Each structure stands twice: as C-alpha cells, then as structure tokens.
Image (cartoon, rainbow, N blue to C red; front, side):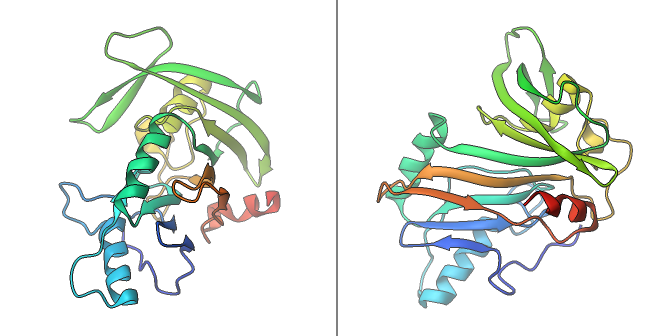
Length: 235
C-alpha cells in the first residue's frame, strides 16, 4: 500500500492546541514505528511541529493509543509529557468514549447488542483469537454495537469498544457475529479492498481535555473511498 501524504492540505488535522494534536489518520499509515521501518504517524507529526514552530531540535510527540495500520480515523497525540501521562491514564481507565464505524458484508444478527470475549494475541502471526469463555491467557474484552442501516450492498455498524485490545473490533465482529469487516481477509472476509485497507474507521472520540478539563468531542470524516460512499448518508 502506498503511504499517504499526510499534511498535504492540513485537512487531516482535526484539532491542535498547546497539549494535543488530533489527526484523522489515513488507512495504510502506522501510528508508531515497527519492524517494517516505514515512517509512522508519530514521526510525521514531529516533522510537522518542527516545521510549523521552527524548532531547531526534536519536537515532543507522545503516543497514548494506536489504531491498526489498515484502519482510518481519529488518533490523539500528546505534545507535552503532562498531556501524555494523563491520556495514558484515561485510556487505561476507559475514561475516553470511542465510536467506530464498520462495514460488513451481511447484517449482524441481532442488529444490536453487547459482545464479551477473552482475546489472546499471537505476536508471531500478528493475529488475535477470541474465546467466549474465560481463557487463562486472555484479556476480557467488551464492546457494544448497533446496525445503523444498509449502505449500498454493505451494512454500516456502529461499534463502541469498552476495552481497547489489539484487533478487538475486527475479531469480535468476525467471531461473535460471523460478520467480518469488509476487506479484512485476516479475519475471514473473502477479498481485500483495492487499497488493502479495511472498512473500519475510528469515527468519534469524547473525552475531558487532559490539562484544561474541558469536555471535547472529535469527529473524523470518512475516507474519500468508493467503499465508504454509501455510508455518507448516515452523517
């Protein structure tokens, strides 16, 4: 997948103040560096801050949470160590309300509900397995979901994860409902999307600002991609 040109029109920046930088991440971009050596969002954010504020040295960027590489949507980065420490605590204590939109190939049945699984990560294969019963190595994982409606030949599902586990939404929809996310061949969808993304988007985050304590809500527009076109009707 070609790496997107973040900051090209600054449209990816949803919010910025002295402590936070909120980005609508394109699918295909890592949040934090890994073994691939590909330039991640965190490095691009550092470049942006150095250029904008004419910093002679490195700019501080802290990563408090991540979304998967093929997933698009909201990522909050910290510009100060104080904000990073408090964001880490808020994510750990589930004090940040997360909303995702996903496209599935068939309608989940029932059309709304709560899913609980115990998830076990396989770091070698970079996959996660979901168990419906308590598992010794598993992390208890919960989410709520509801079908917003049909979007063309797909179904638009709103997901509110209560916990934040690796690949949680992807594996829970596939295992718990038998409805893998469009394009997610890793978890059972039959074919990839042309850009190798998956139709999962971190749509909204609600939180209290870690420093000013102001209540904040960020909403990320959907990617300008054919598979999302019909979902725009639900804005």
